[in-house]
Length: 151
Image 1 (cartoon, helix red, strand yellow):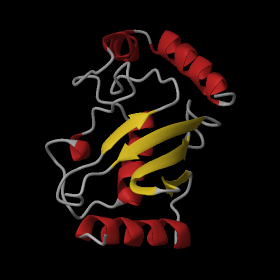
Image 2: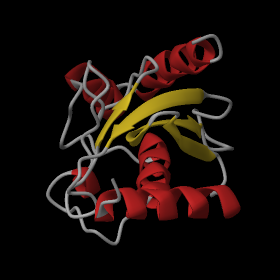
Image 3: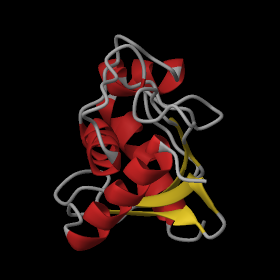
Image 4: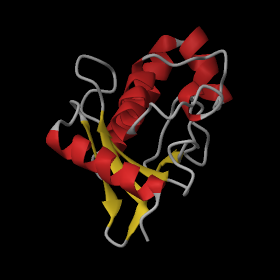
C-alpha cells in the first residue's frame, strides 16, 4: 500500500541517509515504515557531549500533515522531557508544519538539549534546578550522559 505518508517517509529516509545532520541518525523498523528508531548524540562542547540517546518516532497515515509522536527511550533528565520520554517541543505540537522532515525534527530535539525552555516544564524538578541551581542540574545531566552509554 503506497500512501502519501509512506512516500514522504521514504523520501525523508533517503535524505537522512544521503545527507545526515551531525550527531543524528534514524531509520524505520524493518517491517513498518510508520515506526522509526533514532539516535541523537549530545552536542559537542556542551554538558550533553558524549551522550547517546535513543528515541522512537511513530507516524500516522496523516504524516506530514500531522506531527509524529516522538519519545526518548533512554532515561532523560531535562526540563522539557516528561517521565515517559515524551517531549515538550513546539514543533511537535502547536507549531507543527508539513515542511518539517525527520532530520529537522531530530535536529530540533538535539538543539533542545542545550537550550531548554524552563518556562514550559515537563519535568518540574529539572526545570527548577536549571533555573536555581545550575551546578546540581549539570551534575544530574552528567549522570544521565554516563547512563546513556550503557542503555
